[in-house]
Image (spheres, rainbow, N blue to C red):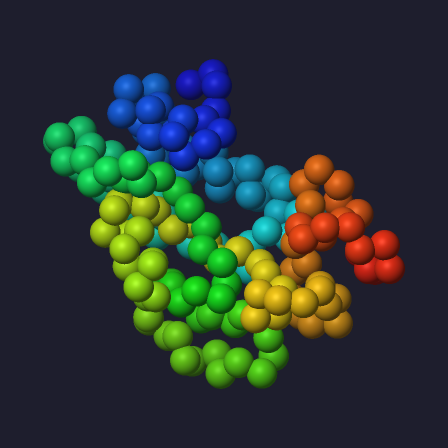
Length: 162
């Protein structure tokens, strides 16, 4: 495929037309994450092997005529305040009981899985998804891809991003 789909709708069309497979799409996104994540701090955890296995299953299902809808075969990230069975949910807080979400999917994760989506990882957030970045905590700081001197929530001039 020469043009990488940039939206879920474009990925849906590309998957259904055969221009790209779910495995190829997942590989592209994982490779981009490998390249960009050290700068952008997007993922707190990744599930590469599980994602590729689910992508293989999605390709088999789609090729056999099973189509679960718009998200079938589409790789997605889940914010680290939403429980996902592949990893603990930290909410990027040091006060969270790390075992509270062990082997648990939040209802939204269960629903997107039932729709055939592929979870590739848990994305960073601010502590409990509110407030400002805190570089004193042992979690990646998400950065704005258009201006890496800013965090993903906006410009914060006094924020140390080193």
